[in-house]
Length: 475
Image (tube, rainbow, N blue to C red; front, side, top):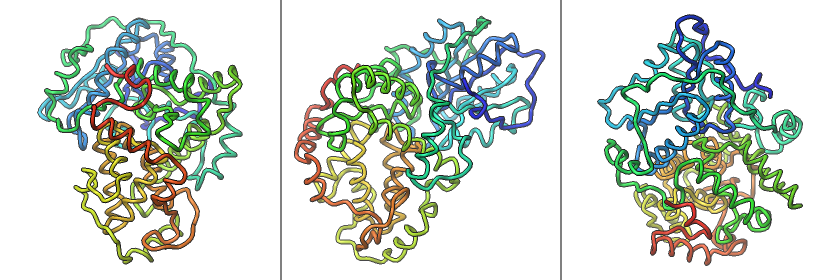
């Protein structure tokens, strides 16, 4: 397996060769045991040093918009992770920081006894902040490993400007990287006791643990997406057996229920894009299906998003748009808006448009919006906001609060696509200029809007997900 392009040393400190008790893996964004290049790297380094591995995972109450939805999703996966690691002889500790006054130095406590700290290489949100600030504070080698992308982000030398420019590079490099991560074979079992601050999680105490956290308790857990590895694997299996054969034909209409619904699990690293790609390729070959459209989304589009955020420091600002988009939006900034809604009206789905309101209700209840309908959702926020900057802030805030796949390279890329990123100029019109427009009539013509409205109404009425087989995922 090629690890050369996946590993980035983020400081100049040496590996601690004497007095170390373990190699420390800090799971920030890839909260899984399976198919994890960073954990594999940690195990290999530990084997070289004659040490065990300790897997550390944490969740704090102080991240922006911390709430029950996100906390529940993350905490629910802890028991499965612990069991999988114990079976391998890898140590595990989890710290749920429930109050701002609780200790905030547990990583440094663990690092004091480590030979090497290995963590996830990730281009956005809290992992980006940590990987920029923590390495200099440690007298310890700090290595970030890319286990989020199939083709490592480091294989690209610059920002790619659209799918057409990255696609040939993906095609050329993919055969070198589309291979399973080898099994983990630690040579030394972790036998030390867990720190006193370790949070014991069971399937029965998730709700009470989350309830005791100083976070926003008004944002309820998703009715559609339980946390944990088993739920991710079940969603993948459901996609392969029931949906893949219909994906290319029906993917843009949410009432057909053919999308994978894996984005929350991919975002939190509960399952890897590599695992999904290999499973889809294998199932398609065995059953003589064509999976090109899905693999385009999973590999080309997703890796384009990671490339964008890796090479774009202001990835959440309009200033990162291509010049043509910035110019046309500036030209049409003064244009009159027929409707102007406040942030609160957007958040609470209080517009004149039943389709837009249904999209927002899907976000409020399920924690994500169907991909094609999210494009419409975003375009309308642009059309109905006082300024383009207001529209961007609203879209990102809604994702930060409600989305289980928010704060993600795909989120930032998808939101900014609404403003012209990775797109081309279209016919000029009010407010949008030459940025692509999407309208209600077009959605009615291309998709079954009425069926979608019925699905969302059913979710609101029953509190249960409308997708076939969804009840199998809820516990």
